[in-house]
Length: 498
Ligand SMILES: Nc1ncnc2c1ncn2[C@@H]1O[C@H](COP(=O)(O)OP(=O)(O)OP(=O)(O)O)[C@@H](O)[C@H]1O
Ligand SMILES: [Mg+2]
Image 1 (cartoon, rainbow, N blue to C red):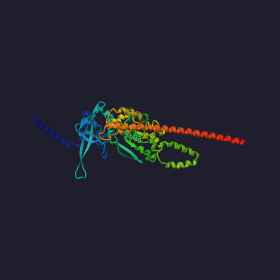
Image 2: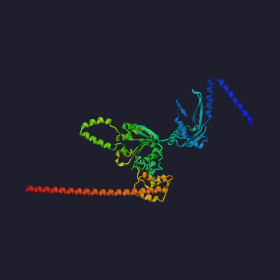
Image 3: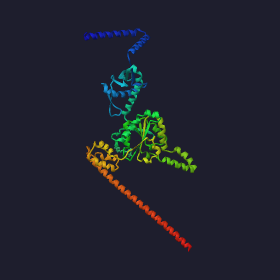
Image 4: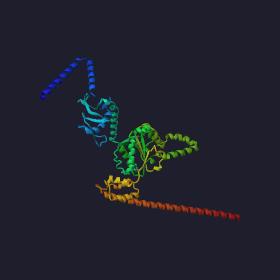
């Protein structure tokens, strides 16, 4: 049969079908029509072994963007970029990378526990009546999930849960993170773009791994925390001298986990009520940071003062009356306010949160604040070791090894220098910089620091010796004066007897 004839026959077949359908629509009463449709649908269902689920982009009366739709979109974006032939590209919410998603009327497949499903994207176009001169067309996008009816339970339950959860998780990973700070009782934020990562953090490899593993284990332990009945939170105390990378590590933590940072300035918080409100406002997947906890508020002295006050009150009951009045007006965050929150209220808020305290003086802190359970992990950031230097040399100078490393290694063992100071010396002074010049500058700085340290110990030894001599002389003077007094007394008695 020739092509022309074939098309001719097909044309008349379609025309015939249209004719029958028109007659059916015109002459059959509507109840018969519904009846007929119901049966044809049943027949269709019997032979058609698939189930389809549609997820519309816009839902509800106000046509809000459906959360499920956007989670599916994100979930499918990784699949679609390798399978679909037509893709849409857009700048992601982190404004840094392109995000690819499948274009309309594309189809991709996915597999879950050995079961295959397919996802198709599509859109309905409807003309809306609006008051403008030009009628606008509205595109309603949707995703259609198709799977075999035998797999209904698996797909409707676990698979869709997995898609939504994974979609949301990918979104969190890709989203633009924020750094919140409290100015008084409100949080305000800026975009968080600190580039620090654990890879660039100068620290011993083993210690670094340990912290990273601890963080990752925490993020995966939702069920564990629920089972043991504890709030899903973890406290870290970072301590060490200034410039050893405490703040840098917090940025690396946020970048590793994709959390927002809530930098809590305790001195700006009026009282415990305000503190509680600020902390309750922090959402899941956030790091709450209190820097320099020892200086923020008089946290350590709080207890002692209270005890002293109680003693005074016992002696003078009138003071207690005055106290009751002033206490309600008293300002400032107290240690107990902070502890109560860390222990109690959080458990009610749910969600994964890290709380990180930093301090330069770990010994100054109240043991109640840093006991395990509150601060689960204590991490010491210390002076630059050779291993830490190697990381900095790689970051700053792109150097894996150099002849001067040997000398630097020896010196770092003798001299205490913070990673911040080492980094400062490694910073190229001209661009492009000379690596060797930077290393020499570091050696110079180390020598200077060594000399200063030597002078300091000498001075200290001298001062100690002077102090020792002084006390010795004082003791001697005291001894001789008592001897004189005794002699004097003796003489007096003699005169009396005479
Ligand atoms: N361990 C480190 N790894 C990489 N860079 C570091 C490290 N320590 C310090 N630096 C560099 O030194 C600068 C100061 O470090 P950072 O602010 O993290 O110190 P800190 O311990 O928080 O100090 P402070 O106690 O004064 O707050 C950082 O900008 C960073 O470039
Ligand atoms: Mg800091």
